[in-house]
Length: 445
Ligand code: HEM
Image 1 (tube, rainbow, N blue to C red):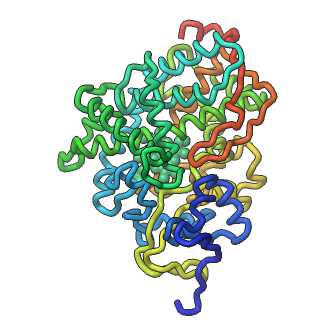
Image 2 (cartoon, rainbow, N blue to C red):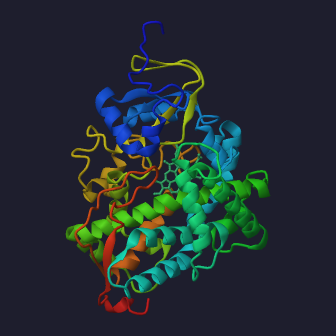
Image 3 (cartoon, rainbow, N blue to C red):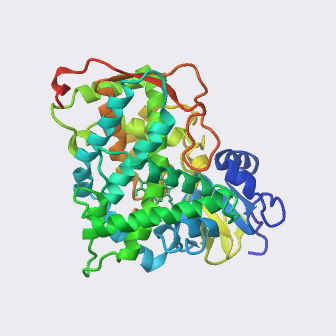
């Protein structure tokens, strides 16, 4: 290993390293570094050397559990906020056993059972939007995504919006991407206080709600091969993390879908034609699964718009060698999601939205770990279990929307704002949503 070189990069200020620019806008930070240094580079964040792995091959190297463990990898303040024992921060056999139980909330049967309440919830929002003139949809979508998480993970009533807990969530998410200074008036200090209130709310929901037709119910009922179940404490820890994991991502995918509907009449027309061709009746998992062009739009939007900058962090288990670089045991590392999705070697003209390149056949032919908006590798590893849930709620929202609504976007800045997780259109996504005549068979759906 003596002649190997460490990856290129810079270390920034003493101790904090480049944490401030990383936290302020991790997408631009990564894009600039990758342009300057290539596919593998390093930085310093809060005293740790962090290597960023870009592109399918490097991403695959990072995901290999022989090379990196997630234990003690992510910055301590993120572990503290979510809980050090939450699934992204554990590894090996403990992770496998926990993940197996968590995946019970994402089976086709479980997903199918969520559809009726999810449709009720989406229709409630659409009905309200069509009564208003111009409105800012970012906050609406944030509340909708929170209510969705609340319905799924705390068995909340889909007919009611929970604005108090949603506001606490907002505070908690802001604190994740703020400097980790623990004082009552700092963003991080406020996030911890909001987290504690949410923990109390979730504890109460687990204790008092059965959760039929929700992920809460599926997780309570989950059993491993030897009859093992999630303990009450594990369930509470994971549900808080589920809220956190789901909220920003779902808000963002809905926002970008509406931007596409407003800006790309060609895409909207194809989605609408596909939805109009569905057989009459309510939406079901099976019917939504048949919307193959809409699925391609949903995949492509997760590639084109910045949603999650990177994976959680791992730690090198031993001295490693990757393409002439030496990565020392104990260094931390990240799978660089955003720059992998924007890698021109895999996706020609990567900033262009072209749903056809995500059509089923083309998608299946992509190199391993080229398409990683929700992480990569097997589902039993650290890949996001919520991928199939997003694959469900995106077409559900799209179908409910195009069956009877049109959107107009007045002139505004629709580029993503800076922000850690799921940045939204800068000007708030100002829009007019109008009710329009729908295909006759859907009038009573
Ligand atoms: C567009 C929406 C979403 C995006 C972009 C997203 C992205 C991600 C990413 C990047 C990871 C890290 C993967 C890694 O560290 O290797 C992750 C992990 C995770 N996500 Fe998601 N996610 C989304 C929605 C959801 C939803 C709806 C849930 C529902 C519960 C969820 C639950 C989780 C969990 C539990 C993990 C940790 C998995 C593990 O470490 O084993 N995510 N997600």
